[in-house]
Length: 156
Image (cartoon, rainbow, N blue to C red; front, side, top):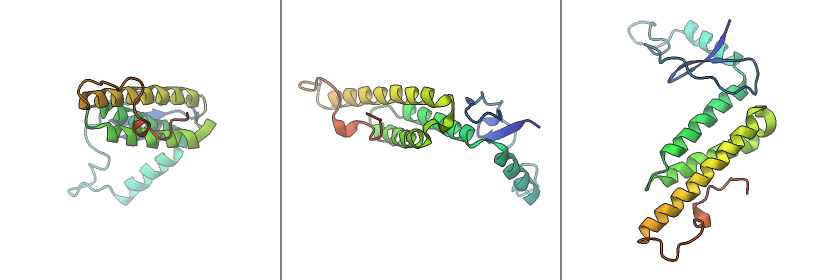
């Protein structure tokens, strides 16, 4: 039986290697899980048990990598003027997850740390540009953004 993890974008096949990188999601489902469960749309107890059993088969590392990927995407989407607080929040949470996971993410750990560093640098640049725009062109604003605008858990 092939292991799959349900996501809003569709079911994602999951390998048995804990450190394996997540695979591309399957096409979006035509109906959410449990949609065939009757007029209420609520899944039956049997369907819930089956879904929980399937989830229990998925390595935690795969779920963490999927979560990390979502946080990276959210951070990038919020790197617009006026939304940097949301980007910072996503980056702070992701940095905490990466730091606390250590090497338990297997081969994906160094790559995830590298991508996090790159997105944190993007955040610093976006913050600098926003500060320049707010100060009317950036006079006297040369250099990096103020320390208060950097993600707090960037490892430096």
